[in-house]
Length: 329
Figure 1 (tube, rainbow, N blue to C red):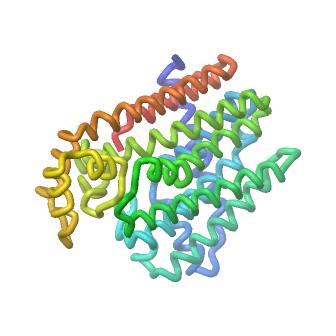
Figure 2 (tube, rainbow, N blue to C red):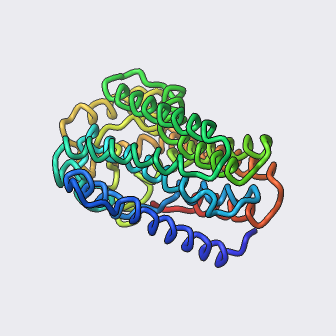
């Protein structure tokens, strides 16, 4: 296993480099109603998991992480575009403990700021020092479209009662996992990896992304608010079609399904409602099944890394995986 202190030092260095580049990206001042909201969003925190993954994948295939820096900046800009627009669509008031862009300004400003981030993401992707920019652009564009498709499925689920687990996994692969898969694949391309290695990185990112979303679903009911950074049980309170709710609505006893439907019919849910539904999750085997599927995808991600040459770069990716496995928010 890669030395933990060495890994943490590397990640800190990469994160500082990305943050420094993002400040330069958004150094333009006017018009204020475009650039102020963009700066606000990008400076509101965030773990930079996606650009870090891209740069570690670049090093794992023999490249220097600075070769992938422009692409890493691009994926972080793209990711934050999705967050701004998701917040508008979901009518969320807070993001990372602060008012969302559309609450601090208005919906029109938020939409425009998101559009600006897309434009900047392509600008920086195309600055990448790579001989076949069409390959990077095609991968980037296809991923953006998949993310939009995933968000569309997620919104459709809000008014659809017969959502099944295959529907959920199709949505997650597109909305969450495709971006992580693209980050790992792009890093492998920029690092000079062969096609077998790039395929392994694509699989690594995809399964990491699926596991990441299931983990989010579980953390929503397993951890306290101070650990997750959001209201405990917020997915249940917002009646989101998570893996947990979908499974329980289809697999719980008839009496427990009635309990779920009675609670979901309420206009507003409180802590007691969350506790009751969490107990149904437990009784229906939902929590244990979700944990098993979570472990399955983490294991597939781990196996994918075994197909990459054993170097310090690969071991850093293994440590990255462990850090995601052990996260609490």
